[in-house]
Image (cartoon, rainbow, N blue to C red; front, side, top):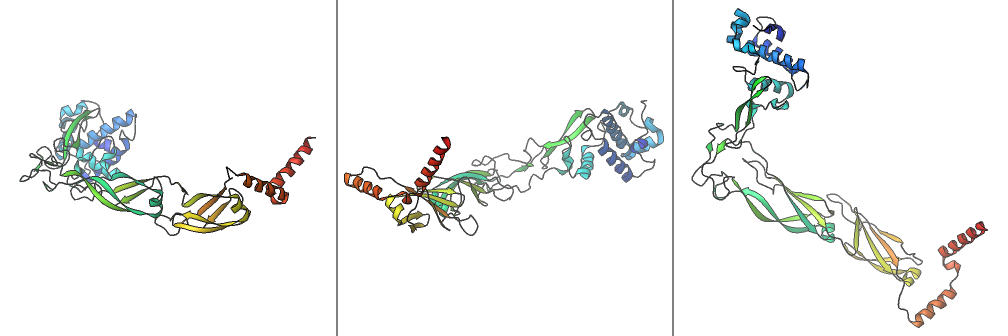
Length: 389
């Protein structure tokens, strides 16, 4: 007879303890010494095995009665060889799953304890998958919003079989292997003995049903992939790379579950006139020397159309003017950005002799007071030369 501790001593309870006291003591010690909570601890591993062995005997009324009367000699001698609670005739995985669920809210949290008594309902509603598409837009379509027609390829219910997956005139049958649960129980040999776990039924794939005569159109899937045209409203102000959602237009759900969504990501083509900066718009406008010097009313393009703007006399190249509330509308919000107009002075080319003479005469009439930046530059240059002497 192997030298081992009394089972009541192992669980820290008195002889005659009730079933609830035995189970409560076991839960506490199983959690304390569980290998997943004590990785690499051989002593904890041995105690975990000892605790399971004690519980296997004391939780079984018949074995507990023989043990109370005859001690170790009253239980199966082969059990004493050390297979522990996971050995032949040991308590099942369901008990341990119940225990760890009470500890951690789910038996699946530790090293393969897969919650066989709480297997997924194979007939539970499942949401359909989302469908992702890309939508090219022009700059103006993105800025102002528009309506576009898109093509969505998605899974829809098969009209031939009504979504059952079975050939018309037949129906799915309960899986003979899992009896409709979607789960089958398997045994694995571990250092602690043979452990029972549950896994998805390979015959029915976890659905709990088998289809002997599949639908010829959907091949037993109950859904078929189709392409559908949809009209969508593109929100004003959307930017390149952003995504908006078309709710409930994705893949059809399973077992009455809701459909997925269509996620539409836009790609915005560059515009020849406008450049976007957040919700602001930039535009470069060329002006002549005369317009810059004397001032003028110019026409400025905006995303809303053309507007007139008076540039003051003496406008310098690169000057930026601001047009308030002429930018991009905020997506799903109030207000909009501004437009910034940058003027670029264009120097004339291919001048005639008369034009050249006129410019030379103009230059003779101009003095330093007409060129503030030029005057300032030469004054700084003069000071720099004096400093080098």
